[in-house]
Image 1 (cartoon, helix red, strand yellow):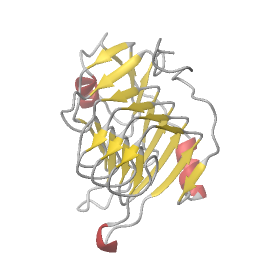
Image 2 (spheres, rainbow, N blue to C red):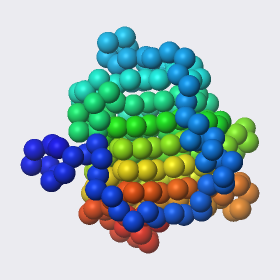
Image 3 (cartoon, rainbow, N blue to C red):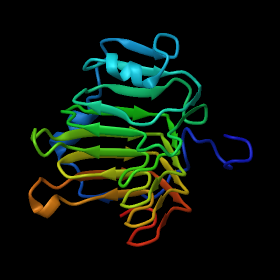
Image 4 (cartoon, helix red, strand yellow):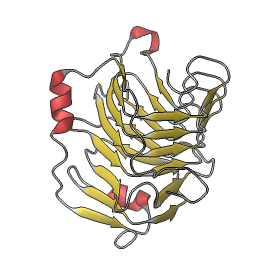
Length: 231
């Protein structure tokens, strides 16, 4: 645990009653459960100085392994790559700080089995939707985005003019969020300070499907909408 920060370790938060919303189809769950078969391990910072440079070099099936430390990065876009991004020592030891400069991670157009994100502390993200992570699909490609986010901590991320301070899950996506902690995230003009699962734009795109399981929501806020923690 981070001394003086939380009374329990961040890598595995205390279990809670699962919250399920628009459950994934059995086929999709099987695809996600199959995991990612790594082709190469890309190590940050031993091989790549930044997470951004490792993402740029990664190919489908690769793993990005992040060593303990604080990484001041934002605008990390994973576009069309089914890769895994994970820490080597858990969220208590690995922080990615967006510094209020935009969303920390944007996941877009990632086919099954999708992108896996594990053991990261994500903080300081600020974006109109999805300060910590924005999961979306381009309306022009028709590619459904798949993601699994596990054992991560989202704290003090913000959506100052939208929804989903911690995570925003948009149309035409399938997402599993498991074993994560959402602490002091905010949505100033929308709903879901911790997580927002948003509908399709005017019903034109397929609706999102999300499984939110064994997560904890503490001191999140939504000033102008519903669901301080989850919407």
